[in-house]
Length: 192
Image (cartoon, rainbow, N blue to C red; front, side, top):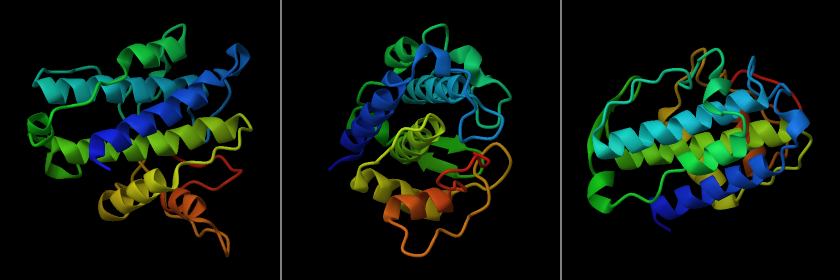
């Protein structure tokens, strides 16, 4: 399956988790330290806008939703689900995916690599929101594999990005191992 197909499926999974959030749950603390469910939604909306800017070559100077931002909820708006759906990036052409950009911590990479990073972001944040709200989030195994592969090759461990790797429980499934690698423990709030 190609990168944009995987990305669309990761977006669909995030959409499903957001669609299940009740109006009274947006201010619930998420599995990302110091971020509410609305903050996580705002951060993911920021990622969609940033990807679009990289794809078109435009400048995007908004930093409220960047990794480590104190309150990205501002980007989620009054209706985070509708804001997300309006921001959701459409598939990108192959020539656009080959465009090279510079990313702090990762260096010069093709935009396709950023899309894979955002697959990882969407998969992790789907779990962050769902688990905080008591949803049983079962991520697609192929998306978990892509996210885990990307993380093992590129993860940035510092405040505002990914927390320290955790040891998964004995016999853990691939999803739990991937989440542990990203600093997440099933059933616990940990740094994002």
